[in-house]
Length: 354
Image 1: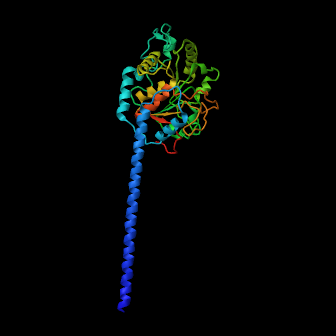
Image 2: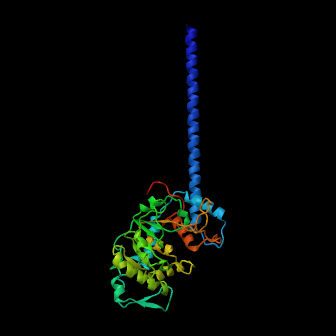
Image 3: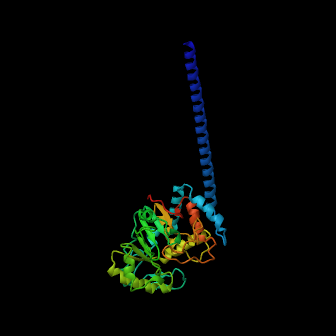
């Protein structure tokens, strides 16, 4: 009897010892994994900080090694985005002080008088005198004065948007800017449009009404006074659209605003002959919007995974084979993204909207 009791007690003690060993091993393993996870997170944070610093001071280059560049940029774009409210406000105040998009982005009845002489953006001697008929068709004032535009999506036409599934995300923005009558679709680039630009060389008067009506009530912006050849086409477009599409204002970029913004960036070291319409309106968005998201601005023939992509998302044209240089405007966008002033989207979008 005593022997049986002793055997049972011995077995119970053995079980308790084994359980204690399992608990110790579990505790050690869990803490080891936790420690490893913490170390991994720290290393990732350090790597992201290093990449953020690198891209915040990146410089233009005549040639780059695409493989290493896209690998590092892909790693950086996978890092959590760090918005910088101070950087955004500093950019906004500088642009507001020097350029004042609200007061001078477009020609309006408020900032332009009948018989006023308008200079051309690209000429120091040629001018245009605004007559009463043209003045009467100008908007009374800047269409969005007196309010911030919230979250803005500036949508370029780069082939990187093809099969991106960014349509829903773009359409969820408060204000959407598009360029050069670019094709819209709900899957990759969305349908919502608040401002669409037209290059005068694109204008075909027999299809103009049909083409702009796709964008519903979006304002139509034309650089009528960039070059002298632009003016006639732009004014004819205004005369056609004004009576037929009154809900869709036609506005002319102010050459004074374009010159001022150009001088601002020249002072910051930008060497391009003339700012692109995309870079121009990204700057406008930085002044007018709370939060700027940039899509479709990618100047290379392959994406971040080295897959070939077309020049535009809506065609199959291939970029010129020399496009292995680092364009200046794209460098500035990378810098602004790294500094937390805007969000540059270079990867496919998730199914969730912001």
